[in-house]
Length: 150
Image 1 (tube, rainbow, N blue to C red):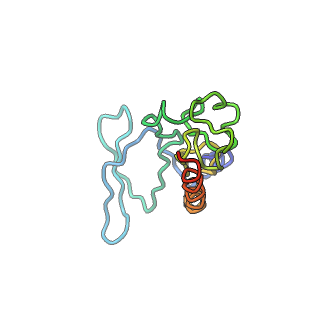
Image 2 (image 1 turned 45 degrees about the vertical axis):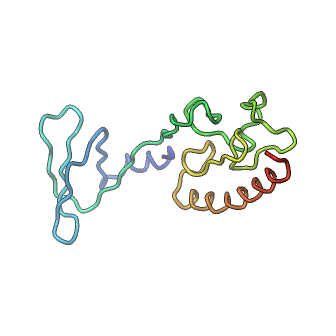
């Protein structure tokens, strides 16, 4: 989450942030009336009258499963397109004749979009847009592979 948003949330008098907390239950009749949560280290769950809940589930990518297959930065975000210039010049899958497209990884024909991609905007609408734009890049990649015999 952007630093300026974090600061605004922390200063807002009508927002309470509960870090390291698991929501155990949401209760209500037709709308949210109560939230029951368990904070880390607490022995009993807490129940409060609450009408709205917003979750921040973290900002670290879940990319461990592709480690060793595609290039990642030091925090685990997948590198694509221009961000590969320094990181992947020596990678065996690099195609000098066909540099990767903006959402293409160092593994030709493999793409990454959304929050897991280094440099993404980290917004749902942006991820959807990246996915839509990536479709054209997939078609371009398929034409490349068809013409190069890859």
